[in-house]
Length: 173
Image 1 (spheres, rainbow, N blue to C red):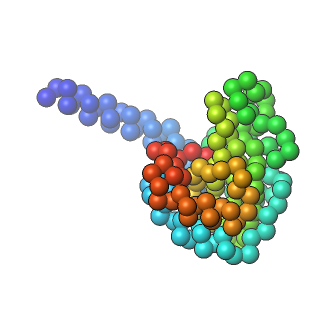
Image 2: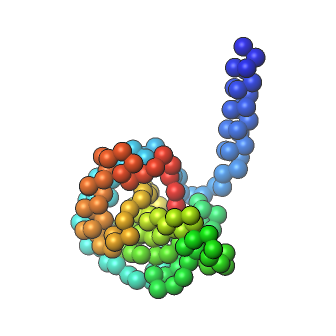
Image 3: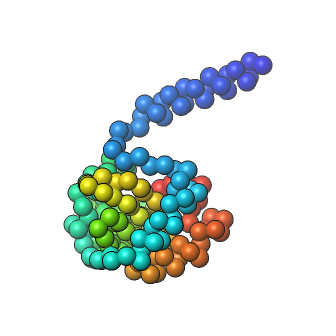
């Protein structure tokens, strides 16, 4: 009985400290919606719309970059032709991510990028926005060759229902 009460007390303290420790970003990241792929139909439909790609990180709208900075405590990104922290021996002065593909429509933002460390991972980031505000955000893992809306949509359709297809058991930016 005491062991059960002790576990409950620990869980209460962990919950309090994790909530207090979160930053107050304007964008709400609903990890359940992301991990269950609930918004993917919207994004797949949006990938068929008029999307314009750009090769430079400076094209990321300021409100999106501000939210990514807030959510990650510093969203550093190198352009596709620049070095980044690809591995554990990379300089810590380099950006943590490397841009692969970036595109935007009137209400959707699409980006693929690499992160390094022990291994290199490719991230997919899809954002629905309106009036300078993020309304929906989805992120998952992909392939480094995803450099067009058609390739991204095809990849998502292929892997969305496979176990460990687009996600591990966590959401990462």
